[in-house]
Image (cartoon, rainbow, N blue to C red):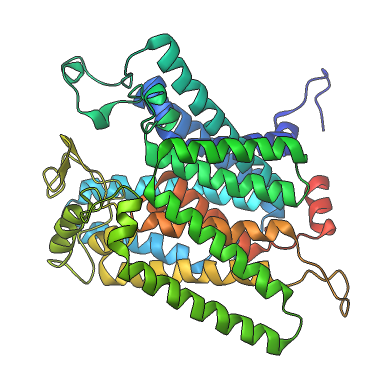
Length: 454
């Protein structure tokens, strides 16, 4: 209801679908482009954005509580957060662990609010808008740096002392667009920009296939995503793109199987093909790494992994305590790994980071969380939607989104720990929750109508 003076009440604004899409867009943008906030408006400005997102999340949960199915919150997610919180009691760095757990919880809150309050189509729209802003903004930013500034750009928070001969990894943009080298975009990292481009390619493609966006604009946005994947030159994302295509082909093959016998044969063929592909990749890893521009050390990642493994073996069962981003001011992270003059803040492998921080127990809980999400994503993508019992049903293009996005996240998790923080964690929680809720697979008109009438 509106106010008597003609202005909408706070309650009506919070219930408007446009406002909810805008909130979801902010959550996804902040997750995948956190450094765009930090590098432009400082850590204090970024903190203000986070505070606004958290406050809005709490208010939205309260306002929409009658329409939220809280049972959809995955149990393994709750267990993982509880384990992280409990780890403060045995943590080697309890103060830093408390900060890490708090950051994990508020990130989860924003993700759960987005997943539980927005509808399926609104989620896809919000994700698409956030990724469009990141990709277009990154290209425009790099053009501005190359054509106007004509020099590398540092984040606003860099101190005067650090501006004297700073390490390359500290730059927001290194002014490489016109030199044909890897660009970093507004996210400040070529690998993160490449990941955003891969996610954008998936989301834009699904929007075109499901007719949620017009064909020509959708293809142009997909072309921009492909261009940025090329401009970032990330080997991990090239592998992720191959994996996404393989999963897409596998889903389409299963969808074409009309009988149980054909489905079993299809699954057997897919399994055999995967064994051949993985075996071939292992045997030919040397030449493949050369094609991808990598050496046997995987750009120094092996040294990082060896250091993490050695540390994790000292506390293998329950880990050193949850910390999320490594806190560079506490032991053992203050001098654990330094690369190109910059102290590293994660293990560059999500699974090693889980083992390091929460031990084998954490790996089991997190593995169940991811596996359950993967199974639900696959089932929703390969099962027909039936309007009435007994009909032949149909497949929804939007149901492809969850397994393809999850595939991209899992490939990235082998070379980065972003699955556990910021955008990676937000997307994982959203996929886990919405696949359980059924929003990404099948949403009834009655549910959507109930949400709009609430």
